[in-house]
Length: 147
Image (cartoon, rainbow, N blue to C red):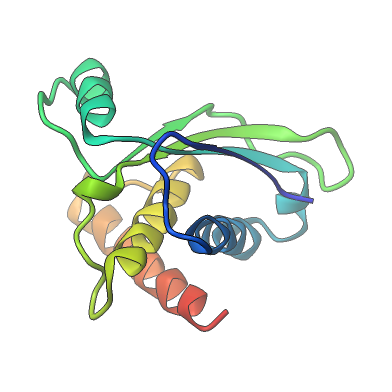
């Protein structure tokens, strides 16, 4: 079973956390198959001020952003072995733009998908990486809407 540890420092409307959890679980399952059952991910919902502090500390950017990921660099484990902590995804709802053709929740789902992809080693530092990662991001975000 995928373990999600959710810290909600900013309160979201009812049902939103469940949708974000489904998004993270969907990406992990799609990317890792059976090995996803032995993964742990932290998901924190934080304010803009806390996000600005993290962004300044870790990326030398003095302003808030919508999502930050902190991977542990631990590879996903054996589907039958001990759980592996993949890292943490930090979301700042007040910094999230509405999702493509959607609302604020859709924007948060897109950010949760984006952050989870980073935990799994995806990046967008080059044009090729960006194309591949954003394609997966769009695919998984659309699939989560259908869940």
